[in-house]
Image 1: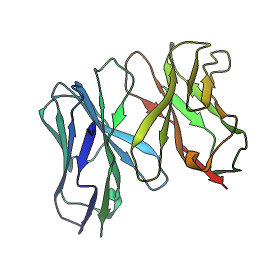
Image 2: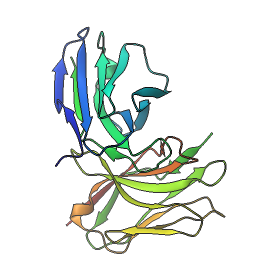
Image 3: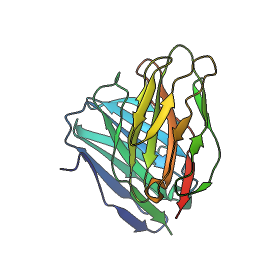
Length: 113
Length: 111
């Protein structure tokens, strides 16, 4: 069984469009994250939710809006896509906010044309 | 603030060579330290961790020792394989706070 899953795996879209990436974890964890990985493999944390509450909101354009309908899901909606949004986006989960180990999804490669 | 510095890559080695990837950190207090590995086309997965000074984490032939005096957590493997080709990330977490990752080191192993 996949622990942390993301859909879609690949997303190609035009500038200005709005798109969503979905993430689900079946580990029973309380905390979930979104990361952005650029072409040089640098990982940047974007958001974190604990029990559906936003606990980390790094300096991210407000075109990015996370939504957590329940603690097993954390979706990322992006409005007015720009070329610079092209990256691989990873979802991760963690048992609790004070735990250390994170479990990552397989990533969503977003390409904005 | 907390930060992690790891050696720049790519690191290219022949199969069976010895591997060291350097990692140093800056943190207040006593962080937990981690190495994550990202195989091509996949997400990150935990390779090993150490939660206090002098602890040694090990997994799949990889080792790293938490050195408080030198604020280091260098990754080593005695004999690398082609299948070890991946990106390796050093990371720290202090007091249950978010993970802080290094920039990642690409390892390429040639047969």
